Every structure is written in structure tokens, then in C-alpha cells.
Image (cartoon, rainbow, N blue to C red):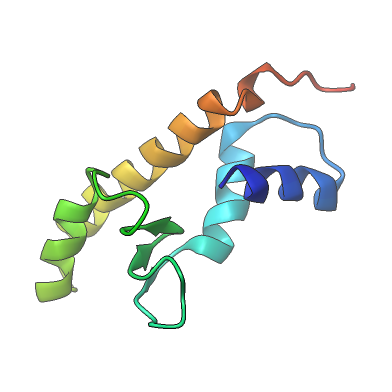
Amino acid sequence: MMMTLCLLIQLTGRTETNFQYAYQKVIKYEGGYSNKHMDKGGETYAGITRKYNRNWFGWRYINQLRSNPDNQEIARRTDFWVQDYYLDRWIRGGFDKILDRD
């Protein structure tokens, strides 16, 4: 995730440290559910792998969504925890401390 945000800043040339801007860019490519055996991370939702993030709170909702994929309430709660996960990484990575050049 840290590499994804660093790469995003490099590729876009933007030094803006707006979390929502970065989050929308990341989730565009990392969003959705995947469970491909060739993927080293294994089961993944929105770029969050169960293998490396077993204690992520959102897995309880992903488990429910797998059995009831059309439940919008569960999807909304999952989205909250995805954003919480990335915001935590944003702050831990110090991205909130980067100043704009303008």
C-alpha cells in the first residue's frame, strides 16, 4: 500500500496530500474482491489481503457478502472499513505531513 501511494505521487506528478484524492485513485485499481491462487496475497478485497491482514475488521463483512452479495448495507459497512484501513496507512506512512509545493 505504501508503495502504491508513493507510485501514485510519482506517476501523477501531484504533490497534493489530499487523502480522498489518493484514496479514489488507489481504490479505482484495487477495488473489488479477488481470490486467485496465483496471487501471492490470496483472498483480497480492495487491495487488502487476508493473508497479510488477518485481523482487518472488514473481513467479517466480506464473509457475509460472500453468502449475500446483493446486501447493500453490508457493502456500505465494508466500504467504511476499507477507507479506515487506507487512512490508517496514510497517517502511518506520514503522507499527511507532506506539504504542497504551491
